Amino acid sequence: MKWAFFGSIHSNIYALEAVLEEIEKFDTDDVICLGDLVGYYNEPRRVVEKIRNSKKIESVVGNHDKSIIGEYAEKTEDKEIIKTDAYNSGSFLCTSEKIELVDSPKENLKFLRSLPAVVEGKNYLAAHANPFSTDFKNIFEWDDYMYYMENALKSEKKFILTCHGDKSKILKIRENKDYEIISTGADDEFRIGIKDIEDRERYWINVGTSGGPYLRSDKPCAEICLIQQDKKEAIILIRRIQYNGYRLVNELENNFFYKNLEMTKKISRQFKEHGLYEKVEDTHSSRKTSGIIGMMF
Image 1 (cartoon, rainbow, N blue to C red):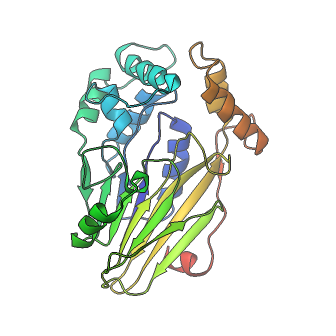
Image 2 (tube, rainbow, N blue to C red):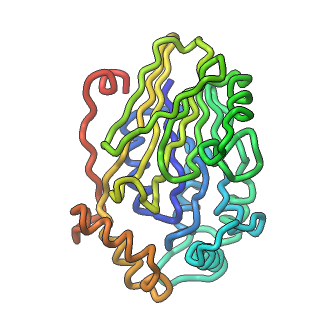
Image 3 (cartoon, rainbow, N blue to C red):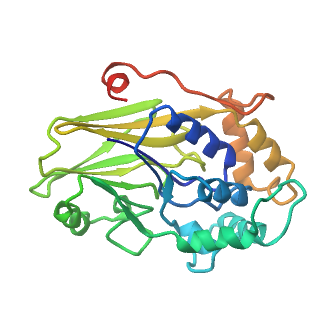
């Protein structure tokens, strides 16, 4: 069985296209979007429509998604987050000469309202922040892990997948409630092999962000998680996909609303400094895997 997870697209259509192109290579059984389809950037309608019209992607709801549909008040003093959420809301309700829509904006809003908080798979639970809480605050933001670790250990599922918080981390929970926080580093790949799928250990995986804002090492890479499980073993792969940011940056810098925002200046600098800004058709580079990852995937 192979499962792919991604999330926090944040209205970045070019990151979403790079992510889906990468996932196609692995012939996965399940593809799960971990929420926050919208927010921050400039293409909420195209992102929502691409996921809504996919026959394979299943999605949960994120805090930005709920904010856009008026069911959640973002607890932040960051004025740019508030402004861009408002822009995203307006993007669903007005027309644009630059975008040809197949369906009405109302269908996109209806789709966001229909998204569940949790998706349960063969051996995983998937949620935006926490499958055991309605608050959009993930386990890595709590000082006391104990309550949610107990819930994880009680669960029959081996893997818990979230993406809230932007940076990828893995919490390995042992049966005695001892735990280990595993940093996934900043390389293009990070992997963990699990020798006994039947043991009582649980893995809480915060995948990170696919669409930005990019906080890890200041390098703009779309993060995804791939899990392959057989009868006895499993492997977790965190993969970071580089893609050409020219079209995203160009659109933001020429957008009357976005061009003066600090988030636009930051992501523009990130793509340009890392050599991921070329005036060509949008593409992304992805090196081949080797060793056990290449064999299993």
